[in-house]
Length: 452
Image 1 (cartoon, rainbow, N blue to C red):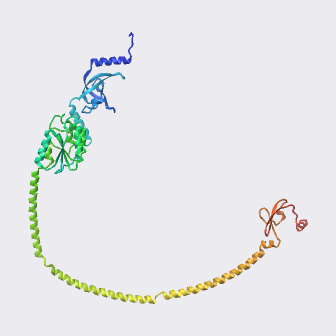
Image 2 (image 1 turned 120 degrees about the vertical axis):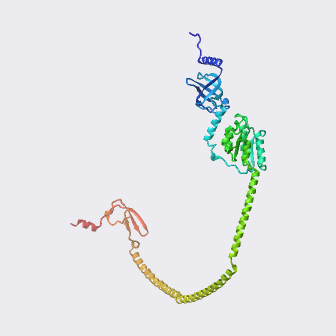
Image 3 (image 1 turned 90 degrees about the horizontal axis):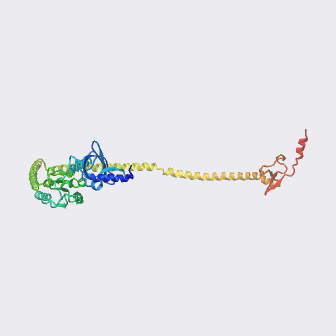
């Protein structure tokens, strides 16, 4: 029995110490699997072979220096140190260098970048812009001290010395070169008089030319509104910039030859075209001159035709005057006849008679209306006297009254009232309210009841 037990942490640290002391830095060959890229920028993966696997970690500072992209299934050679991740008690390789097996790292990075940008369409011919036949100005993106700029300027000066050339000096190798090249391309986009760009450098190793394989340069070329000729390295060198550019030149000198035509050739072509044009003009002049002479011979004097047409014009003028005169005379006679008819059939007499008839009818209407109103007025007065004589109000003025029950109905019999029931007496100047104290039938009614 062990007198003192170890904690898990103590045991894990002992294992970690043993691994780090005994193995330390190792080279490891295997296949990448279970690759994970969290937002921190670190890379987590497994390295495996046919029988075993081990966890691997590549921290962001190391991953940023790797030129190619790690992918699942990629065979690689790794260098790092073995350690133990204490929270899980698992051992892992902290990677500080990685190289692909087979192709070199730069070649693999080149192929990966080429495949990805081709998939995005950056190499499609549909996006290629045509070069101007004779540029107004040429921009050059290269090193100011390299052989490329001297070759380009020599060729341009020899072929067409009057075209303006503007150099934007950049580094063409090193870590900062790609960003400088992309910035220079963007700077030229603001210049209206520059309508062609040449980017490139002289020959070198793959590492020397790598700035022209960077994605930032490829996208700057793709988004350029100005056509770009790529001239990087020698004829056998190919870069990503060559595939994206509107035209690839095998060398910087060849780029200058493709950029401008040869001035002497243009001059000769212009002189040849000028001579041909003069010859054609002379031939045309002679042809049309001959035709003019032929037409002159065939044409008669226009004075003959003018005289004939003048005579015909006089005849037509006389006929037109006679026609107008006859039409005017006929129109005058027609107007006089219509005026006589209008006077004969004028409605003014009828209107005057109708107006007099209307006045007579108005007077008769007023007279008959007065008679009718007078008769109606006399009849109304007679009916008013009769109505007043029969009115209950007139009778009440002679001392009579009307007795009514509470519902304002006339009382015509003692049967309609009872003792203590209310009644009202309507006299000529108002009403009298009362209550029944006694009901006494008349003698006539009593006799009727006593008769058998």
